[in-house]
Image (cartoon, rainbow, N blue to C red; front, side, top):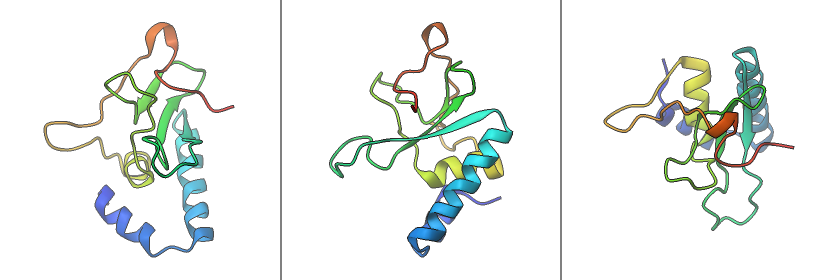
Length: 114
């Protein structure tokens, strides 16, 4: 099982095309497990959500992974964290694992992809 740190090292040496292929692989794996991989649309590198990801449950039933525990916009997970979760079953480590969250009335905290 690979950890997010190991996957992050792999991502650093990938070309943009290979990174996109890897992201598509993670997206397809998430769909097979009943999730939607949502990527932040922020284009400003100073934005809190820039290059962040979330796993949403299909059907808008809430966020599974990568939501912001403080009620912010979400997209708190990196691609390596999502890949470790979807491809290898990683659930977080230490005293602060990424929790599973059911949004209020079936909605997530944050935005749904269009």
